[in-house]
Image (cartoon, rainbow, N blue to C red; front, top):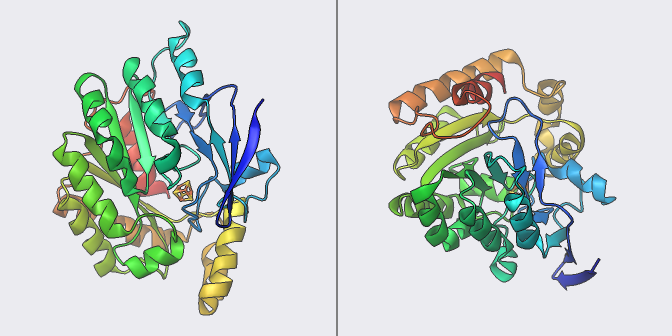
Length: 311
Ligand code: SF4
């Protein structure tokens, strides 16, 4: 197997051939059973990234190398075509970007996500594409065509209307403004766009005004739906997050220790924030979950309930 390394600034890109690309996702709370990732690791460097732990499977440091040692699956589209052509494949919903962002900046060079989209289009695979990057608009031509004869949702996540906070917690992702513009651009091309308004991070981006401004800004883009959520922390991600808080917000350390004795903040806090979510989803007409076309094992409403009520 070919395996060589390209270094750019302080990031190492390891080009590899993969043996398989579609992977099973056994989470009954998610609407998809399958995921696919053109890369492993992600330059966006979100401090709360839940996918960090996956780097330990590659014998890399999940806390610090997730954003600096990135695997590039050079042959991803070729393998994907074989898997989608397999008669055993049942054409189920696939989430593109389950443990990496398919549009982190190196996609400009490699265009592996674009090649994969062409294969999904060829086989009319229902798809969700998850990203925090406005780079997704470079593929709006394919996504718009796909929307004509299969189901595709682009799902853009935004955590804060305040770009100073965004820079701290998602240092290398697109600015909030660029993501909002990307949503408008995709919607204008007839593409379904859902927005993950998450994570709401206690003491950082959780003021009532800020949450309402976020809902308002998203409603002005024409997004089809939102799924809001509160920060939860486990394992490697919790360690990395606390490292960040100790360095950048030392006065909040004790509060966070109290708030995150478990994976989620206390119930009364969650209830307060979930109430705001319900209020603003109604007020800004963002309370329709999915267009209802997802071919999923789950009632999509139950997924919404999970995000809104349980996190
Ligand atoms: S964009 Fe997604 S995959 Fe990339 S670091 Fe952020 S949360 Fe993780």
